[in-house]
Length: 344
Image (cartoon, rainbow, N blue to C red; front, side, top):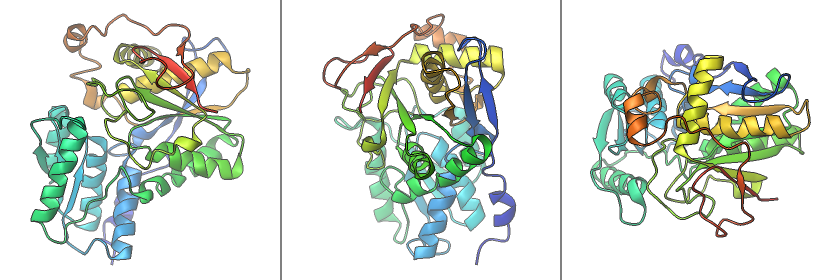
């Protein structure tokens, strides 16, 4: 039986608003629609966490009261905290030292057990180190369930609701701009939209130093997008093009959003804005562009919106160029600033 509080909490997720982003990111009369997933209690991944847990329970993979164990850099952990309360499951998340203190404290306040790995894996970085610890914890807790957000197809399916909302709010979507980390929301939203609008153009936004689209792995400053592993949920065949964005470019966009539009967010929001704004400037006037903003600004007060942190990492007053660099294939050159690659 569902938890008696399920209907109350479930209604808090979804039906997120749209916000028009125009000048100064694009000339007067041009812009894009931002889907504000930060309006969910924990952000974009509330959708996936609730859906994955519900489906696992329905299939008998997750027994009543069993522990949920997962790797996360933050947002999916918040979603699992919500799912744990809704369905009455204890939750353990494995993270790394990059998790913001406010997120860790919130998770603990929600009753989540937080484990932090202390050393990156020599090949797979922090993500592989976290996943290795998840495997150890699953062995220590018989009957525990791992949602496996990186490879679980339920992650992709969860975002059909986001696509349906976009269609209700906008009608036809011609261009969809999404950050790419685990790959779930870009794949799920685009696939659902293309059932109705087969000419949809999907543009992925990755972080410099990420291996998802074939670039060499480097230490990454940005959290929430990019990866040092290769999640199976990334639907490479669905993307028309991909852009890599650098941290200083994302910081500039996030801060300019705050100053001019009030709706803003962290690394992913800034990076997506760089690319969606370029689309609004360069595509034919009237092109209907939607961009997914995964979360809001609150967890980034010690990074993106902290002048001391940004000065230490040389992130201030460095806006992106008017146009991205262009490469034809991922091994042509290493992206160190905003770079575009057309895939089809």
